[in-house]
Image (cartoon, rainbow, N blue to C red; front, side, top):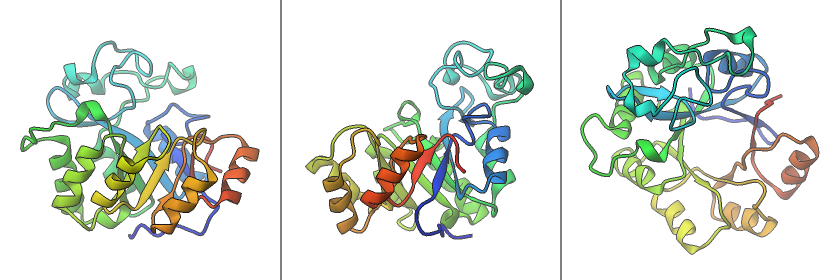
Length: 243
């Protein structure tokens, strides 16, 4: 399956169907797939025993019944946590997924946007780093073309671009576009620029698209704001309600 997306407008499922389901869970991803989403976005970090875990926060406190850093606990213990009750008792017992579980479940069904959390990146590049593990898993499954890897941190994207030039990469941005960011996009031969929707301007969108990159702003839930951005020429956008 290639990263073949429909013509705009379309929504990217931000942490799944996270307006109605607990974010970054299989329930949320299943619901987004069922609703017709064309891409699932999710966040990746490492457990203490080096398993790639799907969770947004550096800590467990907000979205599970656990506490402390994700990186301080081993995967067998993380698997036992309840990642659904915080959202609604209807989702009590919903577990944290691992990247392996996600790939097994959605391979060949939908494109995946895998965000590398900055705290999980290791500049020393050990053999079992998140970057190394991620690339190995995608190659073993022969699904490089199904994946978009993103990060707010440019370093892991530069590393991935060097290791696997065919992998599609996206630079997440939380500030107005400047020359350093443009240079970063060039370094990684970016597929897309994913800016904060509250800050992105028509001039930035036009400049980015003139360079051949796609524009996927985050996170837009208001229909009027979605239409405004589509009118400016964005290619898609992240939404908690990917309908």
